[in-house]
Picture 1: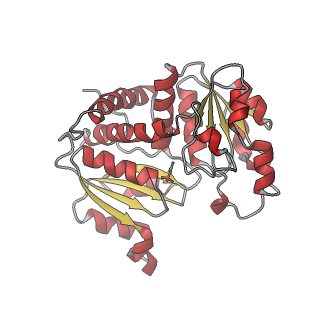
Picture 2: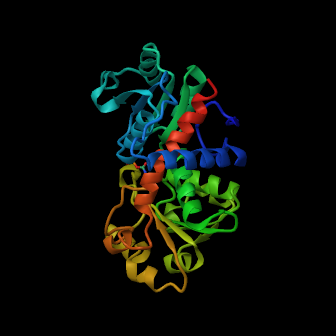
Amino acid sequence: MSSLSVRHLLGIKELSVKDIELIFSTADQFKEVLQRPIKKVPSLRDITIANVFFENSTRTRLSFELAEKRLSADVVNFSASSSSVKKGETLLDTVQNILAMKVDMVVMRHSSPGAPHFLAKHIQANVINAGDGTHEHPTQALLDAYSMREKLGDLGGKRVAIIGDILHSRVALSNIFLLKKMGAEVMLCSPPTLLPKYVGQLGVQITYDVRRALAWCDVANVLRIQLERQQIKYFPSLREYSLYFGINKAMLDALDRPIVLMHPGPINRGVELSSDAADSHHSIILDQVENGVAVRMAVLYLLAGQR
Ligand code: CP
C-alpha cells in the first residue's frame, strides 16, 4: 500500500502532490463506503482518537467525529470552554494528560498559529491540524479541492477565485497552497485592507472587483468576514462590504458560462452571500460538507497506517 510522506497533517505546505492524490483516491473509496446501508468499516478498530478543540467549530468537529466513528475508532472529545484550561492548565499539560490515557491520534483546533506544530514536536501521537488561527486548515482545503475535482475533473488549469476576508482566513492560505500544487490558477478578491502583506509572494492574481473575479473563474470560493479576529475596522460597515463584495444569484445567473459556488461555512447570509445564491443550483456547499467526512476518513486512515 502507498503511504503519506508525513507523520502528522499540520498543513498543506508539507504535503507532496503524490500525498494529495493518495488522499483523494482513498477518499473515493470511503465515499463509496458511505453510500452503503452499513457505512462502517473496521479499519481503525484498535485506535483511540482525541478531538481537542480550543476554538468553536460545527462542521469540522462533527465531520471528524463521524469519520472516526465510521472507521470504528474509539473517540474522546475535549472542549476547552468546559475544561481545566479555564483553571490555567497549559496546552502541553492538557494534551499530555489526554495522552496518558493511551490516545493514538490528536485532532486539534486552536486559535494560535503553530499550536499543532508545537504539539507534534512534543508528543508521540499523530497530530492533525483542524485549523490553527489564521494559518492553515488543511482538511478544509483537501475537501474543497476534492469537491472541485468531483465537479470539474482534473484541477490543472482550472481558475479558482477566493473572495472575501483573505487576511484572517486559514482556509484561504491552505486552498492557495493546494490549488497551486495541483496546477490551478488562483485569483484573490477582497478589499485591499483584507489582503495579507505577503500576498505578493503567493503567486496569485489579485482584483478588488468582484464582478471581474466572477467573470474570470470556474469556481468562486467565498469566505466569511471573520469579525471575531478583527481588532480594528477594515471596512466602513457590513452593509458597504455587502454592496461592493457581496454575491447574489442574479450576478451568477448573468455570467456567460457555468460557475461553481463554494463556501467553507459558516455563512454570513446577506453579507458575503445572499440566501438565493447560497441555495442556488450553482452552489456545491452541502457537497463540500458531505465530502468532508470521506476526505477526513482518508486522512485518518492513511496516518494510522504509518503506526
Ligand atoms: N469550515 C469550518 O471550519 O467550519 P467550522 O468552524 O464550523 O468547523
